[in-house]
Image (cartoon, rainbow, N blue to C red; front, side, top):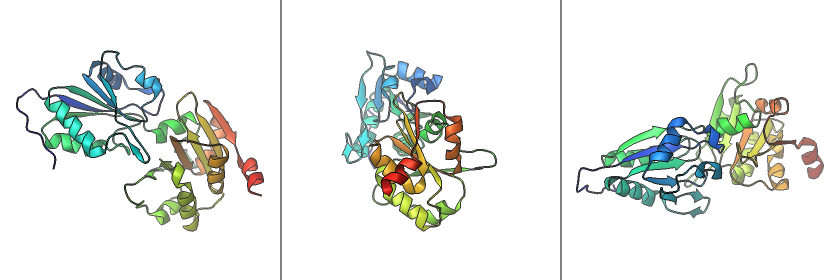
Length: 267
């Protein structure tokens, strides 16, 4: 276990801060206060430009983000950096996209910091599974349609440990994070385990940002929707009957129903 010996009593504090899904106006007041008062800011790839524009010009800010196959800094080294800077007395804003405890590895960082006697606080943020869906006119729960929602990460260190049979049978909204590259696996596994290929589904690119794009169709059409429209990360996948509400509730960004287009392309 990594530890550093503190040679003085002047230990800093680390704030694990959720920056939300993109729109800077969705930051909590506490998150903004932390950004404005920290000695150092360490921020992830999914922290939007709008949020980064709020960084004080005289505060050192370091990018420590991770993209698939391209880690700016390994998680272990990042943990060490947090401990090292905190033990030197710095107040650190560890800024993450969405919420620190929703696929953000905030728990891992907090455990290391607590083991080294460093004070840690968590400032929750709006996770994209709720925020991006809401900005797309898709309520993840809706009376008479869906009484529950399951968040699933499609990214894993080695292999996905997902109970596909259970997911296909729950009969409520499924939201997949970091799943664009895993679309063939997601669609195949869900349909093979009993979920109808005609289940409404949506792809949300750059949710809660000015360049947000939303495409709706069916589970079977997700792959071709992504390829035809050249979707990029960050993109969110929503599967369930609530997607049908997007056309009526759409209010932000662009919404494209691709069902007829995809059918034509796949013919």
